[in-house]
Amino acid sequence: MAKVVILDVNDHSPTFMSFPIAHVKEDATVGSLVHHVTAHDPDEGRNGRITYSILSGNENMAFMLDESSGLLTTTCSLDYEMKTQHVLTLLALDDGVPALSSSQTLTISVLDINDEAPVFKQHLYEASVKENQNPGEFVTRVEAMDRDS
Image 1 (cartoon, rainbow, N blue to C red):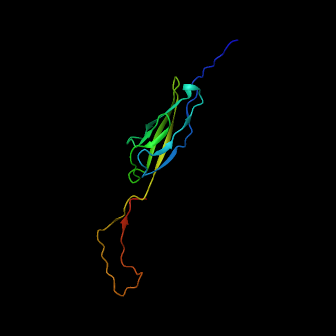
Image 2 (spheres, one colour; image 1 turned 30 degrees about the vertical axis):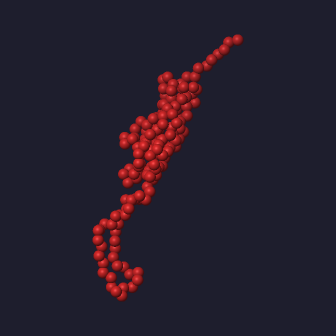
Image 3 (tube, rainbow, N blue to C red; image 1 turned 180 degrees about the vertical axis):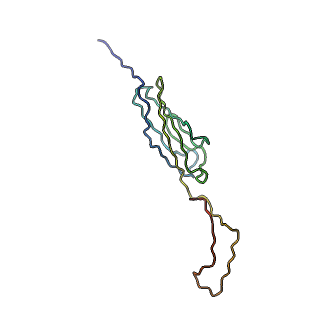
């Protein structure tokens, strides 16, 4: 009786399964989960084992990607008024020889929260009101700006 062993050849690149868009509130605490990056490689054994990394778009180091779990978390506070969107290029790399890889662009939208106080355009507003003026009549106009969307 002969035993035939078929060795897997690393002939498949990882394929991203996770959605390429994520959302995170600007008040998310440091370490908050933003996205679960997942990829699939049908190769067997080490040829199908995948590690993840961020190739580009993380210049301010606002995010950390766990290389084995694919969990993407925040590393600092985010501010919608400073940056509304982060675009990361992610890499999924298998452990075969030679290693095969795929990349994906992940767009992270920062969601605005009401964290900015309104600021009046003038420090002082003056108006005259007649003593017999009817209730609800126009007196003056004041203007304020709020950096929140």
